[in-house]
Amino acid sequence: MGIYMEEEEVIKKNMALAKEKIYTVEFMEALPEDVRAELIDGQLFYMATPTAEHQELIGFLHGNFWNYIKSHKGRCKVYLAPLALYLNEDSSTYLEPDLMVVCDPDKMREKGCYGAPDFIAEIISPSTQSRDYLLKLNKYQSAGVREYWILDAKKQTIHVYDFENGKKDTYGFGDKVSVTIFEGLEVDFGEFGSGS
Image 1 (cartoon, helix red, strand yellow):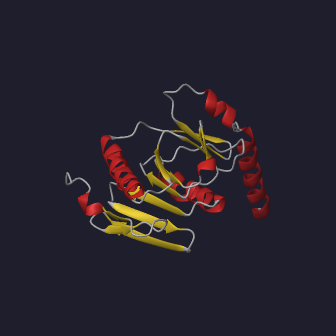
Image 2 (tube, helix red, strand yellow):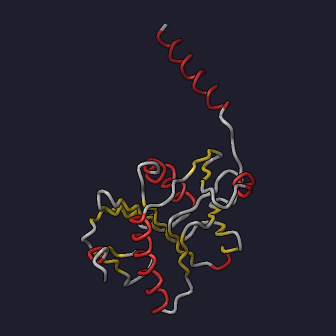
């Protein structure tokens, strides 16, 4: 009887999943410009408007990357959301990372990036936490993203996933964090919010 009950629960869950609507990239591209959402394996996730702190943090990070690339006359480019990421070039995943660095110009087209960026940073909020730590982490790693940072402004932590070298480290907002994909780039989070 116990086994039957477990099987019955599995069947009910699968039926519920089958009833969920599966969305496509075409649906995403037809959304009004003021509606922000992401699509992961056909599942739609609406995104909240970023907070001022979120924007300050992503601006700080963007400035560090932009200045480094410019001073080294690099060919990589840094992009901020909202810009589409067609990660697997399929019809079921459409993302808008907070920040991405793309070093292969052939991946960039008018609508966004097609294929894995070299670097992605996401700033979590309570509504995106599980997606950033689980779904997106797995998607980014399997697609070939070289480095992924998850920034948590509330806990003042930076989780660095160096996929190329199989490493994960955690830092605080007072630390200097090296960017693995760029030799010599170190982001000093002690400067964030100091007006420097």
